[in-house]
Amino acid sequence: MLRLAVPTRAETFERMREPLADRGIEVCHVQTDQRTVAIDDQPFEHYDAGFVFPPRLAEGGVTDALLGVPWVNDREAILRSRHKGEALAQLAKADVPTPETVVVSNPVDESALVETFQRFDPPVVVKPNATTRGIGIAKAHDLDSFLGICDYLDLVHDYRATGDQSFLVQEYLPDARDYRAMIVDGEYVGAVERRLPDDALANGQWKHNVHRGAAATGITLDDERRRLAERAATTLDIDYLGVDLLVTDDRTVVNETNARPTIDSATKYENGFWDKLARLLEDTARR
Image 1 (cartoon, rainbow, N blue to C red):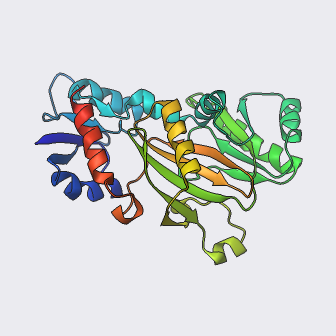
Image 2: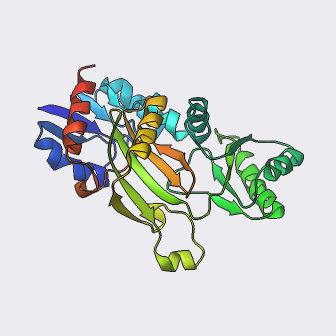
């Protein structure tokens, strides 16, 4: 039986254990953080492959060296998706439609920020370059509010231990529908629509992240949007990827990607999802 090392023990871990066991893959949790590791010893058992590089990259590097296994989504794949500016630049270069975006590398003069704001029709979306779950994302309707948000980011970036000192300014697409498409080994395997409840929308909420209260409902994407999500994964060369699409009446854009997407309930995926994931894991173990 193929033994799979999984660094996180959350929803995805629990949901994948039984379906993959039925396909000859033992899913095992490997703790990579909040512990001590003597690098002269071998604290880990034998595994054949790893499923998604550990969330903490420093500890993940230690784990990777000691495990010595190939990964579905290795360190480089995680970084290509995690850094939103880089991912969007790669996608735009490949003619994959994305929102209008400006990457700001702090510190910059206020005049540069004013010029950036004036490129857009307000409001604008301001987001950190490397956060998930909607953390730190804000919407600015006017220049003063925008500069105030930038001031706070400047304070954070002034801390010398902060490695990433950049953020994104993007166009805001009102009334856009929010879809997450899942891609496994270059193929579309399912999608959900993420939608806030009516009372949340009435109270002014606008981030359609599940961790912010949105509900994810399984949907069937049309062929054009399936191909778009597959193009994004192929462009970034990431085997297991969540592709976030924003859809308006006249546009579909790739807003973000997630190389560590949560596996949802099986009813939200196409038939054969677990078989395709198992094949990807088996192929990875043979590398």
